[in-house]
Length: 393
Ligand SMILES: Cc1cc2nc3c(=O)[nH]c(=O)nc-3n(C[C@H](O)[C@H](O)[C@H](O)COP(=O)(O)OP(=O)(O)OC[C@H]3O[C@@H](n4cnc5c(N)ncnc54)[C@H](O)[C@@H]3O)c2cc1C
Ligand code: HEM
Image (cartoon, rainbow, N blue to C red; front, side, top):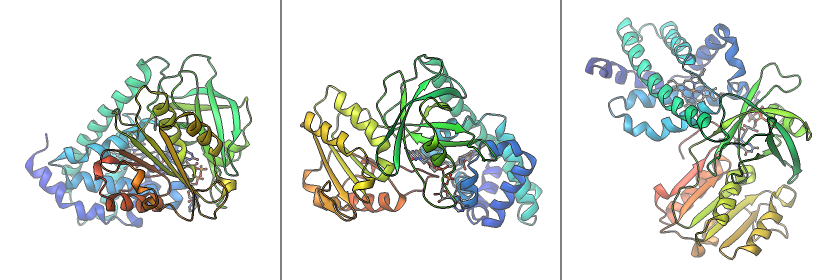
């Protein structure tokens, strides 16, 4: 329990954290990596360069300070952080390291605002937050370890099938080297994959959504090549790997998954964002319910249109599946040309009683959410996943 005084002091520092500019965040990460260089094997150093992750931590701390007397508000965002941490095997001993550098940074850069009294309050508040995270993450680790096919930390998987899906996306089936079972994942969840690409300075961990339903034997991921010159450390490396290559995986994690209910589902994706949708789709079509499933997908052109044949086969086999495709540049495999416009199919959607799942670039997801809200879909029926540090839409 924090004292009223601590709560009041921590709350008063919200503007300090919320406005922490690049000077503060960069100082923190420089400090962290110079004192604890081993953490460079855990953090995504490309995210560091693009600055995306740098703000995620400070924004989360600002939200924590803001709601320190009503932590229930943070439940969802904390769960998301805990799952992300679990996919990288963040451990209790990491928390004091991060906390120490955080407080060190604020003391060094903002000595006038970060007085000894403020420091004391933040030490207490950080310890409480760390405790909450450590407890939640311990529960996730226990689940991953103690269930059939489960494990802890990394486990070696061999690529048993490599399948080109389109110009940019290739799927990899990953089977445990030990030949034993794998733990069930919830459709929509992702894996943390750890590799050390040739030429890379550090080991790299990335998340990839599992693109098939659970089968107890293997997982499949479908990876998009990054084309930007500065980017693509892991995705491009994975594309060079052949069947027989071995990678390390952390157990499935993620709080974006098919809700266990019997509502009609609408799966909406753009580009490689269809990976979690494929796991959801396969799961939905194999269950006993007769709920309608709608699959809406958008991509650039025919060459980049992955899983088209799979969708057509499924639609032919299951009359309750309807699917529509938007190709930005048009093509014979498109129902519509240009960007996705939900209004074009709104009449066929379960706007009042469906669950809507979205995954794709941030701009796409924001536009789709806006369209759904304009059609009076309830906010709580809209679920989305970001392939990078989370932002609220
Ligand atoms: C929950 C989740 C699920 C995911 N599922 C999938 C999936 O199913 N399939 C899939 O393909 N991907 C998925 N991703 C994305 C994946 O984890 C990787 O982020 C993606 O493959 C890119 O990693 P990379 O190492 O190839 O690129 P990186 O080298 O990490 O580069 C990534 C981006 O960082 C930026 N960047 C890199 N270097 C610089 C620089 N010097 N300056 C400025 N910006 C820079 C660029 O914008 C670049 O596009 C998922 C991500 C998450 C969080
Ligand atoms: C209470 C303290 C912490 C808070 C509030 C926090 C918050 C966050 C947030 C908000 C994200 C982004 C989640 C997303 O992708 O949406 C994140 C990701 C991450 N966190 Fe933490 N975190 C904390 C502690 C730690 C610790 C102790 C470590 C380990 C050293 C750690 C390592 C990471 C890594 C590696 C990522 C992924 C992003 C990347 O690789 O750049 N975090 N954390």
